[in-house]
Amino acid sequence: MLLGIVIHAPLIFVDKSVGKEALPEIDYMPEIEPWIGVILLWINSWRMPTFFLMAGFMSILVIQRTNPLFFFGDRLLRVGVTMVLFGFFLIGYPSGNYLHIGHFWFLYCLIVIICIFVLSSFFTNALNISRIKPIISWTFFRPWRMIIFLLVFILIRLLCSFPYNGNLPLPDSYSKFFIGTFVYYGFWFYAGVGLYFAKSQILEFSSFKVISLLGLLSIFSLMLAAFVIDTYDFFVTPETLNESFTLRFFLMNMYWACTTSFWTFFLTLFFQRILYRRSLIISWLVELSYPIYIFHLVIAIVVAAELFRAGYSQSEVFLMTIPLTFACCLVSYYVLVKFTPLNWLVNGYRKSWLKIPLIFGK
Image (cartoon, rainbow, N blue to C red; front, side, top):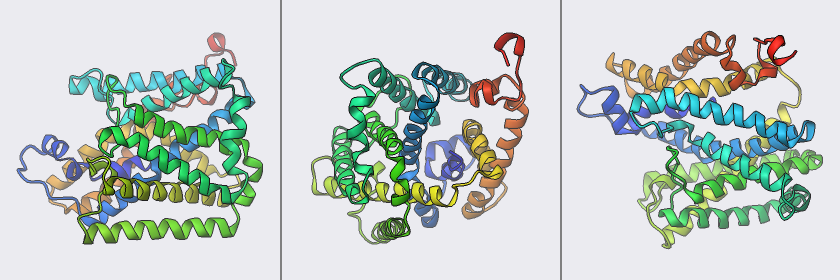
């Protein structure tokens, strides 16, 4: 989630309406520079699928250590209530649209997927976790079965994007419910659950040969995208396709499905391989990731706008906005959240510094 800062650092150049609102005195905002566009393209190709993959993995991990009801209540509080509270004060109320949740859209998807997962997997017979476990984990017991996973994912991608002209629209308001988007990210969530059940085979997946192959495929896919975007009009990003049942619709969705899978599993397995030991720095960054994502959007827009207003170039604005936004979010977290009851929502009561034994117990 920390990469949200990188994604939104150039937002005033990517989204002209945001740029106009942040800098009303400037009539023309420059187009996004190609090298920044490639970075955004790369991050967007794997960031959210990886998040939902890890969310599914951690969900079943927590359930195995506690129980479904505890997990469900914990996520309703930390995901649902956090989304409603911060979504209202940071997005809904300032915009005048109280149903608007902006960059908290993925929490909306996550809480819906979690509700379906818990209710169906632990409180029904037809989709009980013991029944679906062999199915969702099958592809992870042998590296070659990932080809089957990729073919299924390509089909899921095509079916989910077909009703929306090749796109996967973001539900940035409670009034929006795009079934294709929820199914798409739900697929990655359940893939994470399956990966957990096959964790005994993770060493085989994390072998040098498998990671190297995924790395080469990932890098090649990105280089191909950067080259073709610069050379041919045929190539488009998933957000700009806007057509269905055409040759380009099939080719582009197949390409992006492959790219997403390559990068998601390459980065997941690569970091699992190198971060097998506990690290204070990694633990600290994990603690920061959620609250920083909550605060970063408004801060990034303000910082970028002030830097551009001060005369810095787009590249300088992008590179300077990232560390400045991180620093501001860091201060916001330690002042507003870390030592206050808000941390009970963000990181959970058990992990919070502030505890009230007489009310909640030790």
